Length: 151
Image (cartoon, helix red, strand yellow):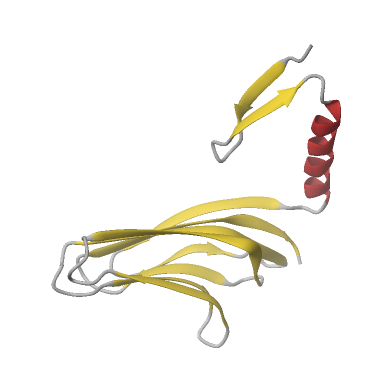
C-alpha cells in the first residue's frame, strides 16, 4: 500500500513522496545535506529597467554564481522605434553573458523570452548581472534563477 504525500517546491512544481519509496526521500535528504555542506544558496531575483540599467544581482564576494534560467520581458508604448532589452553578466572588460531581445515597429508592443541553460553559466564573484531598456517609453524586466556556492 502506498501513501501519497504532496506539496509544492519553491518554483511551484508539484512534488509527491510515496511512503513505499523511502530511498527517493533518503536521496533528496542527502542532496539537501550536500548542498548545505557546500554552502549553496538558491537565488531567484527580478529587476525592472525603464529606460535605464538596473542590477538584478551582484554575485557575493568569495562565491561563484551558476545561472540556470533567465526570463526577459520587454514592453513599449512607442511602436515607431525598435527598442531593445539586454540582459548582461560581466563588465566592459569581461562580458560573460549578453542576451538581447528587440521589438520591431511591426511587432506587438511586448515580447517575452525564456532561456533555460542546459549547462549552468558560471559567473564570477562580484560580477553584476543587469537588465537594460534601450529607449524611453520602454520597460524591460528580467528574472534570473540559479545558485551561489563557495568559489
